[in-house]
Length: 309
Image (cartoon, rainbow, N blue to C red; front, side, top):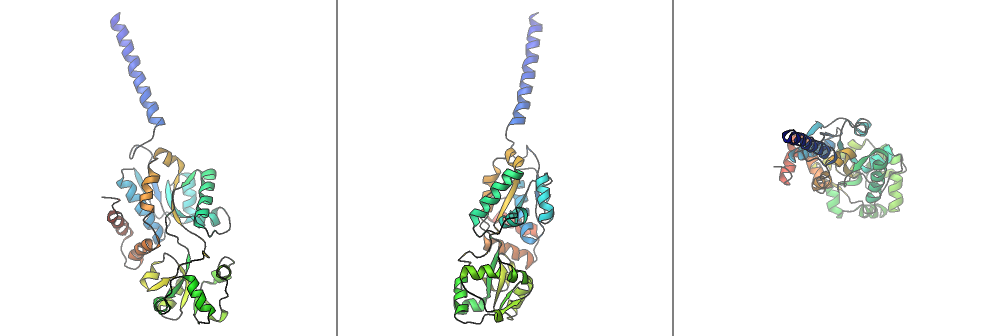
């Protein structure tokens, strides 16, 4: 009789331990390699490929189960993929979501723009914006290196002062930017001046770099992280009065992934803080100008900064 009682108690104890284990697995936080697969996506241009590859390699080295969907597509493709769960994370630009997804007017304040998209995405889509990087892939006024040296130019306000003094700088800008109210007109309003029409010419944005390189123009409109700025000896002037919309890059994660892996925000911050305009421009240059592979550049950067072994 005693034997049967102890047998029954043993069975109950075993079942209890099993149930506790199941409940514990379902309600606790997963460690790297124990939870859901993190599908890392990205857009298709060089900078996005680098950001996506660095994230994939970094999370993999930390021990997470990751899947590579780098280069999945631009915002019309990758954004729905994130919302549906096809991808778990990718890097996006604050201004892109504010303007293209939310339908709001451009923002010229980094923190205000970030808070707006962060709050909206978490509430509407359960998408979490982690801390944004210092890199701001927006417009800048660029001048040839020799002109920057001749006039000791570092800030846009210094360039504007020379224009107002009557210095004839031949400026090349994209037609769309010249016509848009948040483009040339906004720049003139913020810096309180009027650019002489006789010195303003329209051309494709990419052509502007070539015209400056060939000394067929003196100044123009640039993207702040375009590698040709550095490669061509061009100087992107500081936008010291914040006339251009903000486009800070930040990693976006689905909430369910961060619920499973709560250490990721602090881990990703170690990568994010390293990525300022100059750094990402140098990485872009290694791919676009030096013709190195994205994977090679990304992995070397992570190693150089002690993020992976």
